Every structure is written in structure tokens, then in C-alpha cells.
Picture 1 (tube, each protein chain N blue to C red):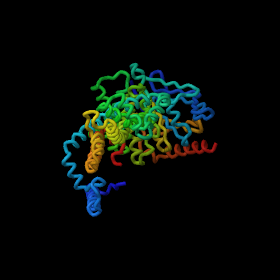
Picture 2 (cartoon, chains in turn yellow, blue):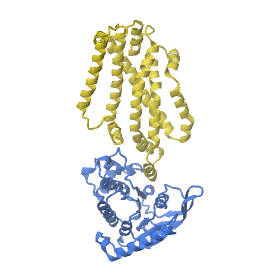
Picture 3 (cartoon, rainbow over the protein chains, first blue to last red):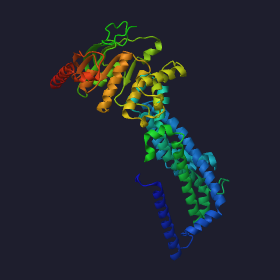
Picture 4 (tube, rainbow over the protein chains, first blue to last red):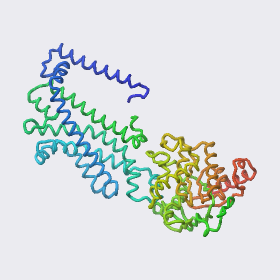
Length: 266
Length: 269
């Protein structure tokens, strides 16, 4: 855990130093060990490839980013609706929750080929896979948030003879927003993974779709290790950007609801 | 209407807020009674202090009166000043031990909540006036209105909570150990606030506390809870209006002795 007394600058300097130490070791290991570039290219070579392939990588970043964000957005919307549905009655949860868990336990790589068969080699299937893989954290967190409201607050609403709708809109949903953000943070990473997995199955040559996942399969076939490492960096960057976007929304648009829960200090 | 500021009115037809409880029983599980055969008559505008050991059913009694817990047996009748039909839903207000404010709403919006939940709303301008009046009455000035609960001190949070309870102008106010978490200075100030609010607008108040001095200062009568029912009701002869100086009076010391004695008797049996 990072202590709060550590200043942001100090953290940043330390983290950067570790990064440079790591790349330096990597660089000299490759040079001194005379490792073949197909096995492990040097960091300089990877940098060079990032520059040479910048338009492909940028295009992949944008396409995969779009699919991830769309999948994530669909998860947030669909997951919240399912959560609201679940929050309405205990018997609904008992009846349907096992199937949501079941959906979660089905390995996505197992159903991806099926989805490709049904929905085609394209953007929509990739988004669908991203949605399915990132749905569960939203559903479970939103449901928990909606039903874990303080008893006294519920009494306060009952005392005012507040109906089901008012209790939902003025109490349960505002209370669940910080839980939604927590779920979405987990889902953000999953949506990127789901998109790239989807793109593996879409592959190259079957359509004009170019995402980070299709770049990976393409470059793997050409044994371009340097480009593969480059695309790993770009994928990581995409994951960070997605998470950053979720955090940014939580701290700006949703600040009123998330600030009281204190989780941004974690 | 002339308001009697010294004693509660026994004329329940004219004044709302009277409470009559007959043979009230509450059981959460079979064989495990929280309240059993509880009887009490509370006059309109009376302040009743409720004391007793933890877990003796004081809070359950308040919840039953508020309709938050269904009685297993017995009967509760409440008299209201039903000026208009909508008020029926807002004649009872409850103040919890913790302020139970909605953390995503500021001071003003928290007080507005009961008005928003009413079946028929009276319009934004009227609501704003009611909220402002309630906030003024508890001493929260407009500089605090846009603060969120996490930005408030414990005392201010409690004032916020009381303002929310008063905004619908209830006939009956139920206070469930509202000041237990506050320090003595603040507790005394809050007691004075409640008394002052009562003198401005008398209403029936039930006040649960573990603090005997508070129970005496704040009430016309003190109900001592035994296990599952009210064991003793002690009349409180201290003159009105109540002042903090009375805490050092002979009458107060005597009354303190009587209530403590009753409490210890209940504890033994």
C-alpha cells in the first residue's frame, strides 16, 4: 500500500526510476547476451517499431478503444438495468442470479467462436464479447449497492410513505452509484481484454477490421516479436486510458455520489 | 388558539398529538417478545422521557408508534390535527441516533426530502420557504445550506436532522437517543434547542435517552422501561419554562434520585 505521506512527485520519480532500471537491464541483456531479435528484441528496437508502425498502432488503438468503450457502456447500461430488476424482490434474485453467475463462469474463449458464427466477423461481435465479459462486475456491484441501504434511511423513507419508485430514485440509485463506479473499474479492464480476445477470433484476412487483437495475430504469423511487444505496450496504454476515463467520470460528473463513500482515497 | 406553555393538554379532541397505547406487544420471532402488554396514555403536547436499560424495547416502542414495526397484538391510537388530508402522511417525525442524512444531498436538500416524498407537493417556492424556516429554527444559517453532511460537525449534522424532522410540522416528534454521540456541552445546547422549539410550537415529543438528567430536564413525565413494558411513570414537578440553572436545584436532585431509584428497582427485578 502506498502511504499517503509519500508525495505524488516522489511516487512518480520512484516509479520512473524502476521503469528505466528495467529497460536498461533488458537492453544490456539483449546486447551482451547476443539474443536474437525474434526471441527478444531490444527496447530501442521496440521503440523504433512503435514509430514505424505508428499509423497501424494508432488505428488499432482507436478501433479497439471504441469497441472496448462501447462494450463497457453497454455493460453499465444493461448491468444497471439488471441490478435494478434484481433489487426489486428477493425471489427475483433467487430465480435469476444463478444464471448471471453461470454466464460469468462460461469461459469467453469458449463462446467467442459461436458468437462469431452467429454475428459475423466484425465490429458488432467484438463489442458483444466485450459486453458479455464485462457485465458481471456491474450487475453484482449495482445489485449490492441497491440492496445494502442503511436500515434507518429505509425507515426514514417508509415514515414519509415513500413509494417503491421514490425509494428507488431518491435512495437506492444514489446509494448504488459509488458501487456502480467500483464495478465499472473492474469491468473497464475486462472490456479491453474481451475486445482483444474477440479480435483474435475475427483475425486477419476475414474482414477489413483492424484492431490491436488482429494486429497481434497478423504480426505473430510474421514472427515479428518487436511489433508484438509494441502492441502489448499500446494495449496496456489502452487499458490505463479506459480506467482513467472511468475514474475521471467518477471524480467529476458523479462526484456528489462518490465523494462520500471515500473509495477514491484507496 | 391559546397555547399552554406549561403543561400538556388533556383535551385530545381539540389538540392533535395525543397517543393512547393499549396492551401493545411486539414479537420479532415466535416466543421472543420485545414488548408485551405495554399501556400508556400520552397527552397532546406532552414531552415524555423514556429511560431504561439497553435492549428493553424503547426503540421498538418508538418504531411501533411510527408504524415502522407492526404490533403483534394490542392497539395504538394517535390523534392528529388533520388540517388537510395530505398531512396524514407527515404527522409523525423521527430523529435517529445518528443523523441519518443522505450523504449526496446538502443541508438544504436533506431537509427538503420529506416534502419531496409527499403525495402532493406544494410547489418549489413554498417548499423553499418551509425548508428555510425549518433550518432557521434550528440555528443553521444560509452559509451552511450548501454544505454536505461530511463537511459538518456532529452537532450541525444533528441540527440538520432535526430540521428535516420539523419541516413537515409534525404533531408527534419521536427522538431516539438523538444526542447520545455528542459531548456534554453540545448535548446541553441541543436540549435547550428542543425545549425552545417546543415552546415556540408545542407538540407531543417522545424522547429516548440513557441520560437521567436529560430525561428530567426535557420532560413532563419520565417513563421507566422494565423488561418488555413500562414499569413506572414518574411525574416531573420541575417548573416551566425549563432553564439550565434548574439542574442545580433541590427539586432536580430529588427528581434525579427518584428516577435513579426506579431504574435500579427495575434492574433488580
